[in-house]
Structure formats: C-alpha cells, structure tokens
Image 1 (cartoon, rainbow, N blue to C red):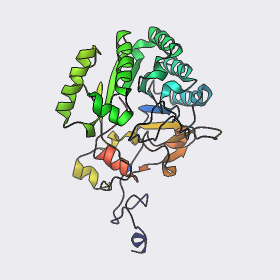
Image 2: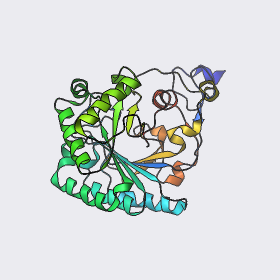
Image 3: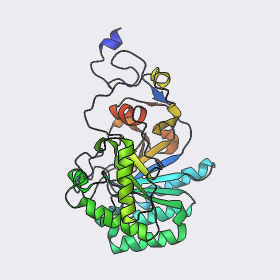
Image 4: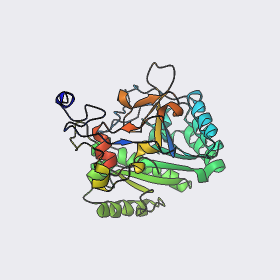
Length: 315
C-alpha cells in the first residue's frame, strides 16, 4: 500500500501503473531488425517530429562507419543469418558516412530499409551517384521508404514546410525512374480513414508512376500518431488478453536502435526507434547487453503507437 501511494502520475514507475497494477513488459524474442540512427540533424523541422529532428538539433550525433561495424560483427557472431538493418534520422543522407555504412550493411548480405524525406540531401550528385552504384550491386536488398505525411500538398506542407511536397515528389520520381525499390510512409491522423488514405496515395502513386502498391501495408505504411503529452491508458499484464495482442509483435521484442549522443565516446543501444532520449530505455553498449532483460512499457508511446496503434517501424 505504501508503494502505490507514492505513484502520483501515469508512466512513473517502471513496474507498477498509477492504479497499482502490474505494468506490461516485453521479453526479447530474437533480432529481426537493428536500427541505426545516423543523427538528429535534418534539412527540415517538421511540426510534429517525434524525435525533434531539425537543422539545429544535433543531440544525436552522426554515426560513423567505425561506430557501426562492431554491431554488424555482433550480428555475425549470433550465427543465425542475415537481418533487416534500418537506417533513420534526422535525415540519413546528411550523415557523411551514409554511403559507406550502407555498403557495409549490404555487402554482408543484410537487407536495408532506409527512411528519408527524399529532398535536397538525397538529391546531391555525390549521393545520387553513390545510390546508383549501390543499386547496381545490391538492388534487391535495399528499400528506400520516403516520408509523405499526406497525399495532398497542403496538409503535407503544413507539417513539413512550404515546398516540401514538391521536393519530396521530385526525389521520389527520380528514385522510381531509376528503378529503386520504394515505400511511402504516411500519417494516419491526417487521413479520414485507412481506405480513403490508400485511395488518395494510390492516385498520387499512379500520377507520378512510382510503382508502389498502396494496398500493401509494407509499401504504404500509415503510422499511428505520437504526440508529446498525449494521455493513453497504461498497459498492464492483463491488456495482452483483453486486447488480444501478442507481446511478441511489439517492436521491442525483436528490434533495437543504435544512437550516439553528442560528445559520447561510443554509441549505445535503445529499446526501439521511438525513445532515444529517455534514459530508462537505454539498454547498454552492445546488443548482448541490450537484450538481456524485458522492456517495461513505461511510456505513453508504448501504448499509443505500439500496443493500441499496432505500429512498427520495421518492414
């Protein structure tokens, strides 16, 4: 009783909810996807960026090839085959070592899912030449997922800035014309419903000849919303059966993300892509350390994005 009276707000205690119930947690089930956050610097500042990326936010520093290699070596040491490696940011194509990192991943046989806004950083000649060279060698292993918050220009630009819709479509059209494997990421909250959103994106895809199937949830990903300060219910151990949700489907059951904090000597591993700043989700400096204990679902986004929203950043 004394313990529960100390709990004054939701998502406060890692093990007990505000109502005194046992908090839900997720056990490690084996690596499906390793994410690399190449840094929070971005060429734009979106209105609702969950990771606060912008042209001035360098809280997460650029990863170098040297930062990444020990994690690729650790995956090899697991001995259970190739994995999906995801790259996110910030805008990954601002990272100086991005092409070298991509080559290191692909040359080991892993599949690569890279998240980009497909704008000016990607369209620089050096990057385009490097992408074409990688496609020639590893085209079937590589997917570029482009962020298009909405299929109409006005709501997209309201989120990402005037001109961002046109710039992203220029990049998407170049990628499609060169035969890259593509996906689009949109936001559920900006669409009336799933069917209308897929129809709207489908019209855009056909108009620009992007070669994406809008009915395929891997090719057109509609993410649940994450808003700082939102107030979803806490997830308890009873929620799995009440909601008919399997904890093995949660991102933290099979995914981890590597980040490098500004000024740090080495990268660290976090529980998932969503929570790079929260210290309780920093799990160690190696994959082995970061998968040793269950992840306690002690954050609003664990509830709103993963458990209730059914979201996953992986393909």
